[in-house]
Length: 75
Image (tube, rainbow, N blue to C red; front, side, top):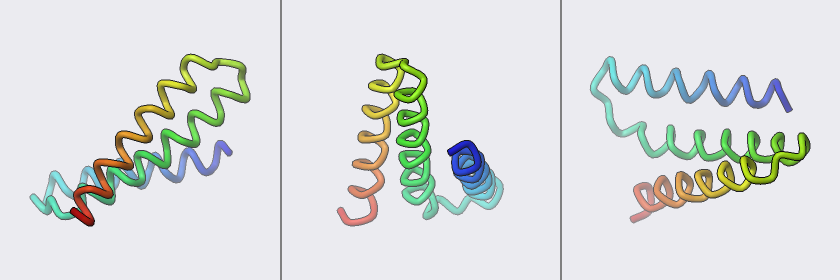
C-alpha cells in the first residue's frame, strides 16, 4: 500500500511539474484523476489506522477530484 501511494504521489508531482514548466494544461484532468486515486489509497490507509474522520475527508476529496476530472475529460 505504501509503495502504491509513493508511486501515485511521484506521478502527480511529475505531471503537475511538467504541466507548469511547459504550459501544457491538457494534462490537468489526468493529474486530477491520479490525485483522486492517491486520495482513495490514503483514505484506505487511514481506515486501517482507525482514523475514520480523516478517512472520510480523504474519500470526499477523492470523489470530488475524480468527478471534476471525468467532467473535464468527457464533458
